[in-house]
Length: 72
Image (cartoon, rainbow, N blue to C red):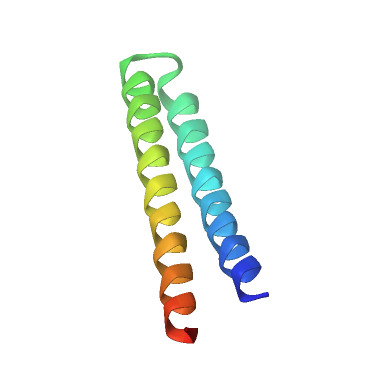
């Protein structure tokens, strides 16, 4: 059950990050429109999303391996 809990926690953190990215993009779009700043914000948001995804994925793997290794 803890395995599911860790995965749900990581999914929740990723969803919160996506909500933050959407809010930032919305504010920048309202201020700048489809200008240069919005384009850079989209690019950096995409890179940040990929980085957060891989960070959380690695965290989940390490946590699962740690808990399984501790039990054996």
